[in-house]
Each structure stands twice: as C-alpha cells, then as structure tokens.
Length: 265
Image (cartoon, rainbow, N blue to C red; front, side, top):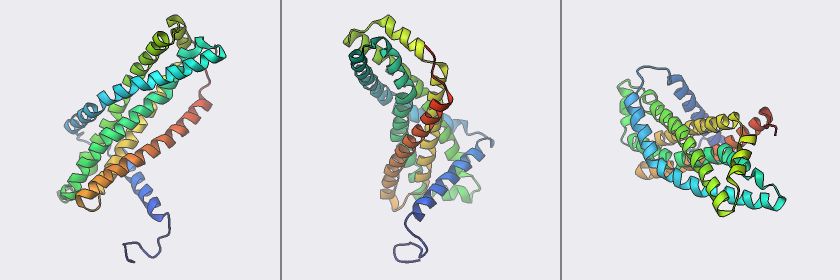
C-alpha cells in the first residue's frame, strides 16, 4: 500500500467502480434475503412508521406548490396557443408521470433515507454490526431488508398522495386563479390520461424507494472516521441517491414513451 491507503495498481476511477460493485452486491444480497424466514415484521412496521412520519407532511407541502407551478405554467402556455381545453390533461399527466415519483423519491431519500443512514452508521461505529455477525445474525436479513421494504412501501403510498394533492392543486389554480372551465379540465384529463400512466408512476416510486433504501443502507454500513464519518455518509447517501434517481427516471421515461403508445383522441 502507498501513503494514503491507495494500492499502487489503483488508477483514477477504480475506487468509484469498486463502490458501484459493492453497492450492486448489497442490492443482490437484499434480493436474496427477501424470501428468507422469519420475516422481521416488527422492524418493518417500525421503519415504515419512521419513514412515513418524517415524509408525509413535507411531501404534501411540496406537492401543492409543485402542482400549482405546473398548472399555472401550462395554463399560460396553452392560452397563448389556443389550447386551453388541454390544460387539465397536460398538467395532470406531468404531475402523475413525472412530478409525483420524483417528489416522493427526493423526500424519501432526503428525509427517510438520511435517518436510516444515520441509524445504521451509529450502529456501525459502535460495532453493533460486527457483534451481530459474530453471534451468527445476518445484518442484511435482520436490519437492511425490512428497512428497504419499508422505504419501498412508503414510497408507493406517498406517490399516491402526491398525485392526488398535486392534481387537486393544479385543478384549483387553473380553475380559480386562471379562470379555466372545470368541465374542460376534467374532460381533457379523461381524454388523454390512461391507466399505464398510473402504473409507471407507481413502478417508479417502488424502484426509487428500493434505490434510496439500498444506498442509505450501504453508506450507513460503511462510515469512515467515527461520528464525523456518519455525517459524511449521510450527505453522500443523499447526493448519490439523487443522481441515481434522475438517471433512472430518464431511462424509465424513455422506455415508457417508446413502449406505451399515447391515447388517441
């Protein structure tokens, strides 16, 4: 080893690739331990409540102005081109397909994921994880799987909440603030929206919850430098999750638009 702990054969990018490999390995271990019994139901419920308690209110508060901004911007644009009757469909589709999963993911990663990472990091620096392994307890099955499942479960529920609140907020601001027609708003939404739009939204939320949970767990299990390292791990987990989520959203949206044809008028 050379000074600073870097192997002589390391070159720029090796450390990042090693981290990606370790993260993928943890994701595979979570998958492999999903059917393992006994299922940690109590831990799952506790973690689901923790995620929900720290994300429900901020998610609802973020969804209202987000839906309002989309509705006002699209309402102004459709008015300029003479397509006011499609404001409801455009804003609702934008909220359900794109805004809801992303808002959910950002809140789950930023609030719930950071709390999860800090908890696991504190356990790691107190050597509780090592003690569990010495006792023959699998920390992935005992701690990580219920937390990842809780993140996925809460993400799906929050995605529905954001969709409802965002569409209602967009309806209010378009109809009340911009003088739109309630019937036209609802009719256009029914004319262009389709059930796969909701399925892709929920699938995105489910996948985002999994990614946020795995990244938070990985950084929490590998803190460096004591308590300060736990804080650094939390910051890294949030940043890494945000980058991955935007990349996954781009890929899923591109695939969905190519596979699912738009609804004919």
